[in-house]
Image (tube, rainbow over all chains, first blue to last red):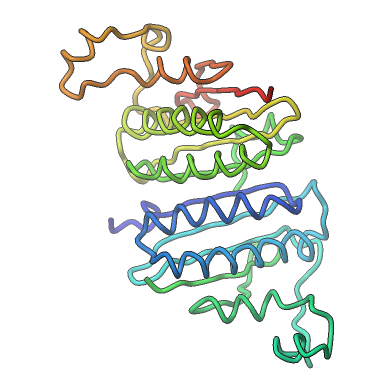
Length: 142
Length: 151
């Protein structure tokens, strides 16, 4: 149990919309096995789908020849998931982003809520430096 | 994160899953494969057959090929084609599979003589999938390639 590799899983898939559903089902099966509650698994499914769609649409610019990589591992009190793209487009944080309630009130496009949703659903979410491409790390406490 | 076992199929749409060799993780492979198969339009019956076959293949890889050493990985490749789904399961092969065991069908009497009442896995896989082929993976481990056709 001491070796973190013993409770880790890797998944990769073509950068094509639709594959995020398969990734979501694979990672939620992994999370259930590691004892995440049903409610947290639902949060994870939404957050992971958003992160995968970002990687496919933005990071990999919808290029089907590129791939998305997911690495999941268990830390003593939390599950950590990294979603890594091949960086056709580098993530740049924007200022003046409308809040979800402002968007729903019609003050802006209903799109572009992914990162906000992710940050609400995870216990920790951030972009971390990766060897190539963008790497978004999501953490869920157990 | 690329792996030599996945190279020949790279131009196709391949999902690659690497799992620790611990019993229970076969469920992750089952759920991933059934998610893909449902999206491809397989009937519930066929999805159930696929889940059983992949569960047997991954359990064999964990228990026998990788001897339940959790640090060793089982690599599952899922390739969606127009006419079906190709599943390949490879272990790191501490224990090569005896050639005879890939073709024989056990009898009830033989199975009951074993402590675990087991030995049905490969027979089941052959019954449930449309094409089954055992080989040695480029990594040196055991590999089983299974195909289930879309009708």
